[in-house]
Image (cartoon, rainbow, N blue to C red; front, side, top):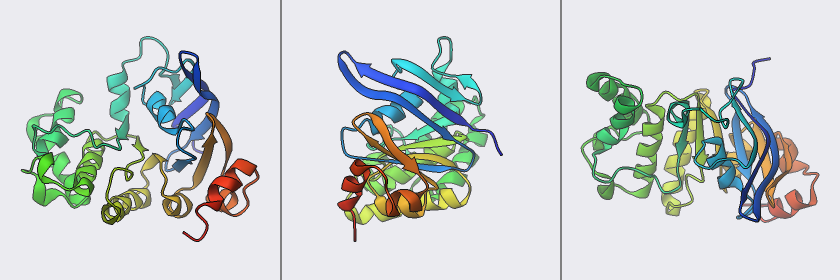
Length: 246
């Protein structure tokens, strides 16, 4: 069996006296599409931020190819170039064009030459359908277009894993589909993804592993068919009952 890319081991996170995550454990293998679902406030986004070292875990480990990247002395910028993140609010540079947004990280972090960075960016902008907009600035784009640019920017760094933090929750309903289509295409291409989402159809149909969180812990996890059709935990059953027939 292929070894894991990413392992979260006994991870906990507190903000002062407020314990947000408690003893989180799970594994991500190459090609996995893992979705993290659960009610608001259950710690899903904090977990993703800990995995990407945007937050420092209070205890536990984030293991990338066998190394604990949460330990002291790890360069988070280099690690984040391999474990990219797509944010709910896009986080594009508003003073840059679409193309510049997708090349600046390559040049500054990966030290790519300008032309190589441009060619690489164009490949991914074409893949997400945003090549016609390379000279536009974020304010000229719809929410769905901004998120597709953000995905292309993350892909241009050649990550091994992509983290998505509720990538459709800031979008108008008619724009959700265009972003989910891009993510489905990435899954078909074998991209390893960890996705915090409220899109239950995506979790059920596209992912191969579902993690249900409640009150800062993993209440249940498993294959989509198992978790959606025969949930064992009462909290999981209660949560999913709201989406029946949706």
